[in-house]
Amino acid sequence: CSEERSSREKRVVGRSTGGCGQARRMSDVEMDEGAGAEMDLTNQDVINKYKAAGEIVNKTLAGLMVYAKPGMKVVDCCAFGDSLITQQCAMIYKSKKMEKGIAFPTCVSVNDCVCHYSPLPSDSPTVSLKAGDVVKVDLGCHVDGFIAVAAHTFVLREENDTAPITGPKADVIKAAYLAAEAGLRLVKPGNTNAQVTEILKKAASDFGVNTVQGVLMHELKQFVIDGNNVIIEREDIEQKVDTFEFEQSKVYTVDVFMSTGEGKPILRDARTTVFKRAVDQEYKLKMKASRYVIGEVNKKFSTFPFTIRAIEDERQARMGVTECIKHNLFHTYPVLWEKPNDLVAHFKFTLLMLVSGTNKLTGGIVNLDEYQSDKTVSEELQNVLAIEPTKPKKKKKAAANAQMETE
Image 1 (cartoon, rainbow, N blue to C red):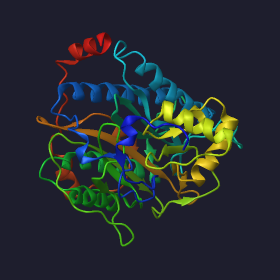
Image 2 (image 1 turned 90 degrees about the vertical axis):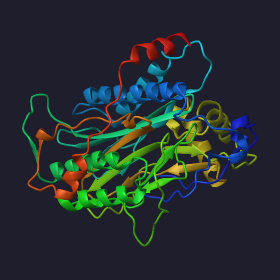
Image 3 (image 1 turned 180 degrees about the horizontal axis):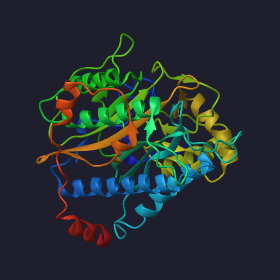
Image 4 (image 1 turned 120 degrees about the horizontal axis):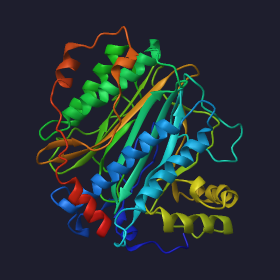
């Protein structure tokens, strides 16, 4: 790449293949051990920044659920989510120069679409939401590189529709949500990533659905959205991960997909629009459009995934991204699918492993009374769900907000 990389990017090493449904065994932005002490949850300022990012993510999820209506274009929903994150980031830490903004672009994946659907305005045919769709929203925000991500699934309803959700929709959404809630209760010091994988498998079995191949839940660090320590959702012969114990002061995602199908995502013909800069790769690009794209990415997104919809000149972006991919400057997040008529649900939480316990920073709440399944929750899953999660402390929120406004 002919563009000069930032000093932070020059210190990072590794690789990543990128994308749900693909193995990512090493982050391409994991810091060198000799690069200096990393700020973590032992620092109250770091906690405040995580909480600020988490609040923005949760408000954006809630806003999107209100915004999404039958007939709405998916591209408009994605653009709305990104704009909410950007606007809220502009309101905090106003006087302190720091990077803040989108850590993962808004993706709205419907029904049999598993993940990463974030279309461009020029894409054809235009995909619009319909009543009864199973809608998955996935997004992320960072403040000074401290990341909060979340995903939520809901059934899109007509305004006056209050009938309970039943059948496969109820099964797959309850399975995914209860699995995620069980998973977060097991992310605590002394437990292992293998315990989380096992309870996800059990939840899928209880509801007669399947976990999804290739899903890895990463440790989060400053400017690192895909850290090396991972929880695998579905371990099989093709993909395994090393077992490790959770430690205090770490940050993790619990990222759960459930499918009424086989849980083996495939590619179709949907355009890939989400990418991440491979900061360990350089190449002197030939095309003017490619140099424009890499310049915009280095300036605006640094180490985080982005959508080419966020680049002002879409035509140049579509042209330039091809050469960047060809020379391994970008990792791709392809749009993945189950078979037609299958349904996929997705829930993702960000967890802070604080001294007081594991805190669920992000993620929506599902009213389980709206989903009537004839499946029975096993005693094993019930026992894990009965563990009392750590409640977030709110007494210092006003002080933290005042700090964000004045800094």
